[in-house]
Length: 147
Image (cartoon, rainbow, N blue to C red):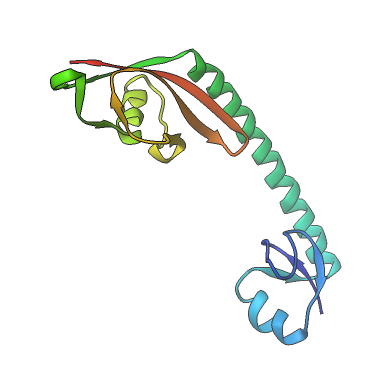
């Protein structure tokens, strides 16, 4: 039985490939789990139109992410934190804190898109990476200052 893979399957191939599988595996496992379609002419045409639509949407999302990245590159945010002796922070500046600061500036960025190697525990200036799209990242300047 020939099937069109809708998802990447490690043992078979990547999404969009037409592969030959045993009848039972295709009918009882792949097709019910929406991981494959039977490779008929109608399904091939439907899959191609869906793939083109998804590529168009992905390209639009990438362009929007690039435009947002250019805006973010020019931004600078300031985190005012409480410090103790020797300018040691009480707590740390986390991705959630940075996301809230960006939200105050008008950017709705999910905290999971903000990549910090470690929590920020000292005063100073940091470049924080924000992943807006799998192919697009921006660096935001973060100032950590005394309250």
